Image 1 (cartoon, rainbow, N blue to C red):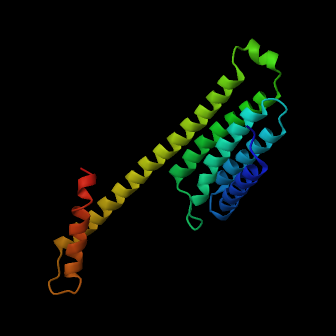
Image 2 (tube, rainbow, N blue to C red; image 1 turned 60 degrees about the vertical axis):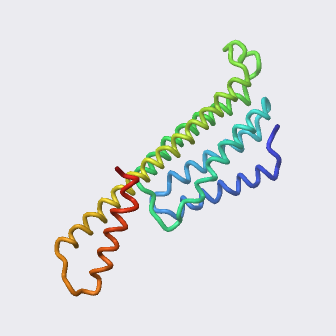
Length: 192
């Protein structure tokens, strides 16, 4: 069933937030591009003459996924690996836009000649969006894990360096020991 006007308005508002976040962040152009293509997919789904319901489902899914990006921190610069992931996601969104446009404008007899039904095309498009979003999340978790491991290694190196040159009687002697125990204790079980 086609998206209601309220749902479309909320999704569009969410995409505009992502777009303005892209304007606020250094090197946020990719965020603007992703939000912009999400808006274009929504607009295309609204104006198609054929297969409105299927196009609306695809547009709603894409806009909902893109809307999650509004949770990025406005004060921080986008990392290179995040920019790369967003660029890959943008390419998939471009493919989805082309499919929505084709799905909404092609007469039924041409589609049948290609032996793909509207439902199969819609399902394939939604699966592509699911796969793209899943890969984005998976790659984010790997990047986060790598960064966390790097931080832990850095803190361990600092702690070991401080431990090698203890200065007896200093006020922070106990604190340094506690930091070393905390970093080498509870977190070690996750990185062995």
